[in-house]
Length: 374
Image (tube, rainbow, N blue to C red; front, side, top):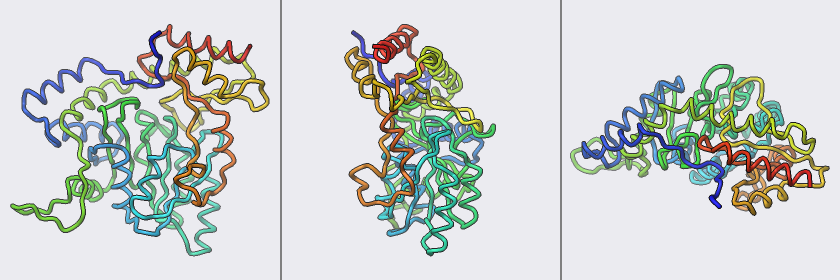
């Protein structure tokens, strides 16, 4: 039985032609014309003037934190409901993670909780250097009140839009609502470069700094001169060629994922035990992954559904385990936590790829319904 994956790559025809061009012109190493073009094209798409193509979204977060001035023992506050790559770079810089709970209307950082916590931190004289706001599962956080709360105290924002390329907040693309924005092009994302990421910013100096640090921090000299420690974080020209082809069909990929979600929502509408992830009124999400929660009072739990799908070679995963519950972050402070803990206990991600066949979606629906109604 062919396995139905959670979110597999979806490659089209343009990618092959662009990669062939990279080979034909012998631009196969990091940097090159496709990297430059990919940066321009993505920056234009997300309405942010400057972009640096990097080896991963994680690398983009790491460089973003450094360029926003994060130092050892600074606090960096981060959405708790996210993947560990959002928070790991905090530790790279020797900073202290603090995790902020979600709100239920979007599963993203709770703006009211953040604002109250910042007021308290200001009274204590212990404000964070940066707040990392995640746009979860392709849906934007409520950025206006978050930005207002941070601006009140001069706290910088890094927007982790790794899962939200193609999503919007109040009509504007995700990625441009912080001092730094980042995207991921990992193999399971809406578009992929096989592996890669992008850092975007309205301030050209930040992006120039990212390019400098990402290329081993080589000073301008005829020999190899280094005044600071750098990183090998730049994207290859071949990967960028793939990304350019993928970007051309991004809107189609988002529409396809939203159709998958709509199929599930319609199929489960009569099941009181199942609630699909809400879409907040302020934005238009990508539905990168189609997520649901199972009623805690139901006789069937999240794991019953996941294991039933697994038995049919269908990949499904629990939603992200909150960062404040992760062993690697044991002892880190959490601001709230009950909402993200509840979502983790009851939440499940279903196959969501833009290349899913109708028969694949039907199979998922049949297994979920049979499990809930058994």
